Length: 265
Length: 249
View 1 (cartoon, rainbow over the protein chains, first blue to last red):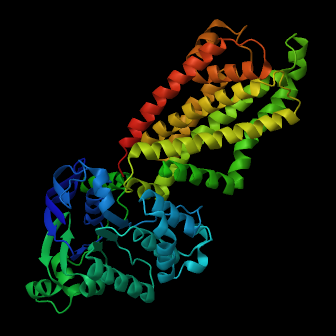
View 2 (cartoon, each protein chain N blue to C red):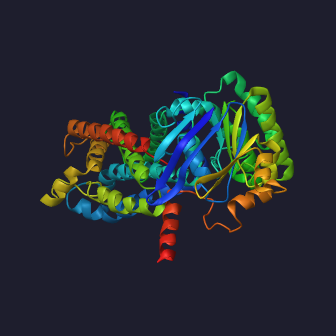
View 3 (cartoon, chains in turn brown, green):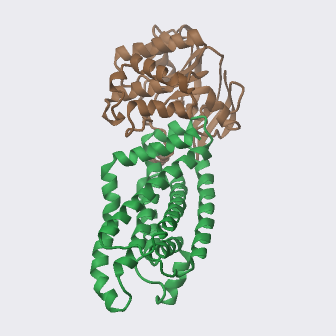
């Protein structure tokens, strides 16, 4: 369903993604793990038509995102790492606009919006402007919105950041059900190793723009002789804390590049 | 079509919900209209040019539309920084559709503001000599709104931070406004000013508006005003659409 070959993304002389290759078959839940700034979000941007790769090949459902962006966009849903709501619109208006953008049949809209908003406990707040919601509620709304148009592939970029255990549990239960019942392929990133271990069929670990290991949670643990996935992750990516911030806006990158250059001199 | 309507509606809702924005975008034109209108009025009258408010109001309406249209460029930057833009960009909708929806929304908001300032002008003593002129005035308002919303979109596609966009405001919008003949008659202006005004798209909008609302003759000729604005609007819409389609985040 997703095929990536020798993918590279450069910003000037900074290489965000260095020659990565992987495949995600249809119906799989695939976790993409890595420290901050490892290249996860950049990879997702290239998979989801938001960014053009410097070189390499990307295929989603057999289509190249940089050649047929609109066809590719019909096939996936995404929950972004950072906020993407219109905070002056109400909860239901945000949902409704999404339905229009994704051409969800009018007859299905109301029922689907109600089901998802109820599932993520936002139904009572549906007429509030989204700027009035708490951080966790906004996150829930974005997740509910991303699932409105039942896509073939769902990208979840750190979807559980800032969520309480109850909501995280509800989210993963729902994702697993979607995956089981509708064979939705899931591509997720998270910093919670136990989540990856719980839901992902396969895991890839990326660091400094390179994939350092791929396999099931068990395989990764065996490979590193670690007791938990967290220990395996640390064994593979080291214990140093990364300076890179979570944001990957080009301007931030540029600043960081300058800073890095400065520290080299 | 649905998408265009939904994006248009979104902008109308956002405008309606932000009272601060309505007030702040109306404040400046009102100040110009009242301070300049009543301040220079007596001198203008004594110079034998007639009623200054009558002359000034179309210029200020044009200025309102110019500023409001450019603000939709700010909104694009806003959407980009606050993330909603990504939601639109990953949707299976051609970029051009998004651009059209946004532009129509921004232009409609600008026209609404222009109409609000028109009402304020009427309260300040402005009178339309030619009732049929309203329709023509609306055409010019719409053309100006489209032209400068497209310009705002084009600029905001290239510039992604607020501070830099403010430079556009200070070094493009302000000169375009002051050199357009919105505040003074171009007829007796020095030659350099006349040439600059000819190069300034705002001049044609203001001139057309003035002809429509005052019933008097226009400086460039209404047909020229209309023609020039249509060409510039088409050019900027094409440029805006092209630059918009190139945005990456």
